[in-house]
Length: 338
Image (cartoon, rainbow, N blue to C red; front, top):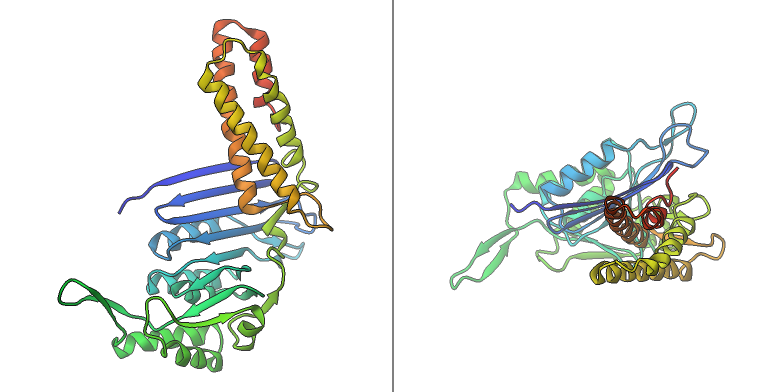
């Protein structure tokens, strides 16, 4: 199986944001180590989008193990790791494994507004010790099935599975919720033998009524680890972006700069400025200048690209003995350096 991984990592003194691309799976993480309520550990979120399969089980498990949740002086967890799920499903067996990994680590699973967690994603979601569904979030369950080929090459599904496999699903539901909730969920699940449709619950209130969710929220990002404040992250948001943009604007003085490099600086500067403006337009009234995690990752990735380009040009300037030009380019590279 093709395995392609692109890692974009941004580390400051107290905050990190990373994005992983693995086949059709995308995992975005954010960590805030600056909260004074955390005597040890920090506040972490992991956003999982794409297929549930061996990659998701391995990668998410490894990322959870690399992060220590926010704890008080007594070693009690104050804020568990939050795992946000957005997936159309995948393999049932990996749904089991991912859900058990969540429960073993006492994480909180989340489905956000206008997002769907279906099939094996729904199975994994149940593993959260706390399970949160937004008012406009949806979760879908359907019967497990096997894909078979019909005459003529057309594919069909078969939901008539061995009794022990169906019992395993019922047992999993019971272990993650309760016998009452699990039996009801299993009964409703088995009504739908379909690869596309299923028993769908929309909104936290309905999910909580059926015992699927343990709590609800109305906003799109209620968890502190779901968005990062420029005010609480020195040198990361406005300060870092402003520094890079201000110094990049001075590169017009470099007469020797090749057209492709000059164009790249303009494109990246424009992207950084637009993402910064977008984040400020979406800001919360009581907490100004918040970046949603996905926008933050892209914003920081563009900054890294621009700083990497500036570093290459700086090194070239030093080789040519152009110390003034090298100093100008170094001012971009050194933004946010302590």
